[in-house]
Image 1 (cartoon, rainbow, N blue to C red):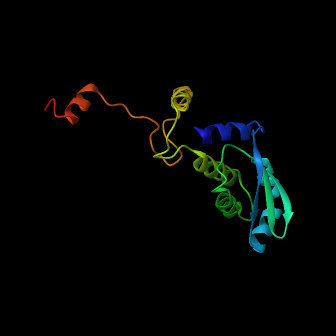
Image 2: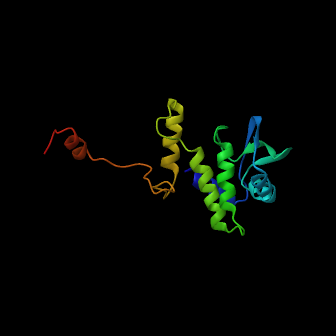
Length: 155
C-alpha cells in the first residue's frame, strides 16, 4: 500500500515528505558521498531533504514517509546502488519500492488499536491491489469449513 501511495504521488509529482524532529547526520565513504552528491536531485525528487554537512557527511531533514533513523544509512546506500548510470522510470519505481518496503509494518511489531484500524481501512480502500510488491497477499479468505477443519471439527 505504501508503494502504491508513493507511485501515485510520484506520477502526480507531489511526493509528500515528513519533516524529522531532529535532522539525522550520516557519514559515508568518499565514493558513496560523491555518488550521493551526483544523484542528489533524484533523492530530492523522491521526497528527501538532504544537506551537505562536510567531511563526507549529510544531514537528512525530511524523508518521503515514516522511516526509522536506524536503517536510514543502509536505505540511502541501497538506493544509491539502484541509481545506475542512466536512471529509467523502472529504476525510480524500484527505489520507491525499496523505500516503501523499509517503512512497512514488519512482523512482530506491536500496533495500537487505532493503527490496526487505520491499516485495515487502508487495505480495504486500496482498489485492485491484492499483494505487496514481493507478491505476498495483503489478506486471505478462510471459509468457515476450512477453519473448522483446522481445529478438527469436521473431516
